[in-house]
Image (cartoon, rainbow, N blue to C red; front, side, top):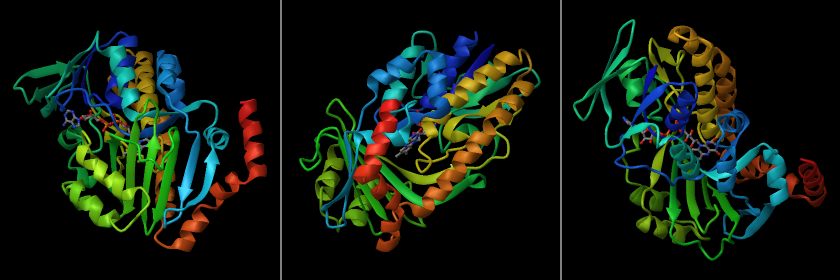
Length: 383
Ligand SMILES: Cc1cc2nc3c(=O)[nH]c(=O)nc-3n(C[C@H](O)[C@H](O)[C@H](O)COP(=O)(O)OP(=O)(O)OC[C@H]3O[C@@H](n4cnc5c(N)ncnc54)[C@H](O)[C@@H]3O)c2cc1C
């Protein structure tokens, strides 16, 4: 059995690994000229953690995970407000969960498949047709390929989805925020190694996350109703305009964007499709659902979803339709739950009103109190 996978991100690489484990061959098509990497710190847990354990990549992921010693919240004027300790953070995450750079999840998966799976970089998909027996694709390098299954793991702005399901606008639910992320060459002196510093003011959040091995991520997330029109906007112009009035480490972090290798800048939007497959074409990861960073679960769902897809194909040999139906029925409730969480978090994320901001931070402020902190530490130590 053979699959063509569009996208060598977390979802695509995880699918290739899982399919190989059930005896399938895969061809991965990746638009970027080389492996991407980089990214931002993600919390990896839930069904992704279980799947990583089953697929045999958990030790490699754990070796790259980072621990945040302290998460420091700052007032609008830059002064330190309150903080969460390592134990409190760990207790809120639970024991089967880790913090890891998105690009490091990609590297682990890439290393697990690169010797056995062909990855064609600098190539995309231009046409898809299918019949009862196979799916046929035309690629941007002029070649054609066919397979038993086409997996669209090409992210939020999926070309597979556009070709096989219809235009993005038909499925996109804007959560009315923009996000920007890039790696900093240099950690601002005000941010201690191994810690995260964050500040929210006027409907904007900015954070610097120290993610281990001397690497640091700059993160920006802000409310805007014109988000869906602006992915083409240049973050070098937009971010200074949105954040330019803030002090603290913000001027230094904005200056760091000039030397960043790449800047991730996009709308925060969910994908809402009533079916994730059409015949022999199936969507996986952000292409299918994009629960968004508000749910903090997209990488976990990409790996967990790939694992369950492999299991469904294994359990339904020779019947792609039955496999995809069973896979979707099993995974939908988890995705629906996380999409709902993402929409709820949107409402309380970086509120513009200072009092609402304070209220939204009450659970965190409580967690920072010594008795609560001690309780959480005890819970954490018990595992
Ligand atoms: C700031 C931020 C914080 C986040 N935090 C968390 C978190 O705490 N926990 C968590 O679990 N998740 C988190 N996520 C979400 C998570 O990163 C994504 O959900 C996950 O990486 C999805 O992976 P994917 O493979 O589906 O998509 P992508 O990572 O978008 O990968 C798609 C791949 O397809 C390629 N591609 C795109 N178009 C084409 C094309 N036309 N042809 C060929 N290739 C193509 C791309 O180059 C890319 O390699 C966060 C996301 C953001 C933005």
